[in-house]
Length: 357
Image (cartoon, rainbow, N blue to C red):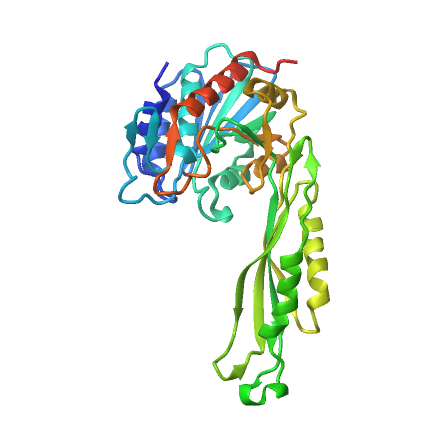
């Protein structure tokens, strides 16, 4: 078998910051087109390779090809014993190396496989290559379940929480600060709202054995005119992370209910971004087998990930990959051999044997 740590190092050495993935995509395309039995499609800077064994079930393996920008010290791969250092090693070129090795070595699987290498995950959701594929070629992404190779340290992170942002703008009346009583201070009006956000008690629902933890936070505040003017406008941006048992519309309604007591005539609440979450979906036989083969430990994904895109199209999905997500995007990003090879073993067995029940 290929040394997966060396294979990952090879991918790290092909720079692929967001919007500049083309060299890595060209390398992957050449590798995949050289393999027998694969149908390979390229859509922009996205690649999809599919087996055609005619099996009754299909697993979609997906991973993003882009990384955050490199630093002066981590642009090239460095191997120190069983640890690989370099930008993207954890997030998520280790996962890509596993996908490439699965594609290369499949001979008589129990399931058909689709391998999706997509661009621009590390930037705004609107630019996502996976979103581009679902919009332009959803037929390429059809499957029974999806497994995304995001760094989870070889543990399963099931489902994901949704996220939304609203901007609340409160109005006041300008006046000279020497005669402040003649105005209405919009910045001061933020105080009670901010206090309510600080005192907010988040839900912690358990879904399919996964403990989710919601959050409602002020993430930006704007206001002020000049040092001698009572401000007539002030705004706060609020981020809500909501468990997947709530729809996006229900989550938005909840946030508006929290905000409502602090609003007056003329104030506005604008929804600026909203992405629904995804239920764990662990009842599907293939994902239940993945849980069993990986040792049974399952965590709730508290952040939003692309599993939600698959779930929105009726495909249960989980995150399962090598690497430690706490070192992703850091200057000292690294990947250890043990979780890389453990992830490989679990996924290879799942492909070869399929659902265990």
